[in-house]
Length: 409
Image 1: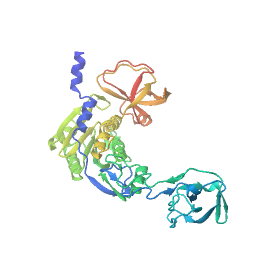
Image 2: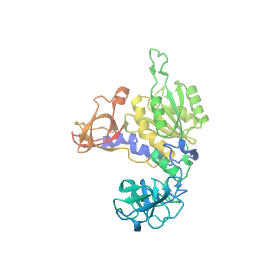
Image 3: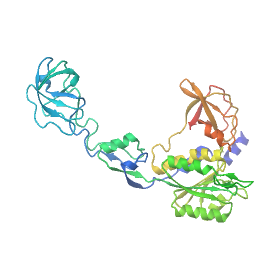
Image 4: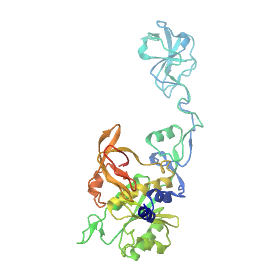
């Protein structure tokens, strides 16, 4: 146990690292946007109804409005007018009178019952009920949905299609939402070229920044592509300056996060004044991960291996973006219960995020089986993965059908 304890102390746990990333994160300032641009934005303030819905008692069905005291099967009533949506009946119902009414139309003064059109016999200007019904039947009272002054949407809430419809019904043509975080993304390495460019004999195509940029956009941020920086302090310095000039809230670097002779990201950021939080965590894939700050800009230095960068972005970048947005789900546990579909050997000191497939369900829970290969360079397998199977540090041998925790992809 002494050897294990010493090794563990050399690396920061995933939980402690995430706590540092989210520590003292302030919500970004708010901006006003029209409803048509507010989908999936995060509300910055309470939204209070400016009106009552419905603003009047309204019919829920097509039929005839009448007084309950006059309603009797076979008892004729005189038709005196019509109430339609947007054009209500302006008179007052008297004894043995009724009004033709349509769905959504205001209930005429004096009426307290709706008989649906299938339950009457019509003869010119006279209608005769063929079925009885209860008083207030098929009438939606004023304020059934909400009343003026009700607070129905709140800060931290993501605006779904239904919540946008609600805001519109409440009388709001625009809403105050948190501005989108600006996330600058920088790929680093002499070995990288952009897709479509000619690769040299020792080069590969850069791919990580597309995944991270897509994740940023899907989370409600603005992805700023800084391109590829060569492994020189001059190239990195120019890229860091570009991130600051473009007012990035977060700078994500890809690669160069270790401390080798050609891993210059950390030293370059330190020369610029970065306050380092941590750079090594007990996680697989993704041990060499930098977190720090440069003024108000937060720094996440992700590993260069494609799978490592995607998983680390999901574990650390996603909740950071959500926190800056004030998203109420930012600190929620992203894991869910599952069942192992195979035996697993004991784990070492690093928390493992194993790419896995879901092979079925058992007792209502997904059954997960990790891929045989977990190499962090294999994007083909990552694209097929349906879940990340989480193995805690020093987890003992696990057997098929044992419970486990996963992150669904």
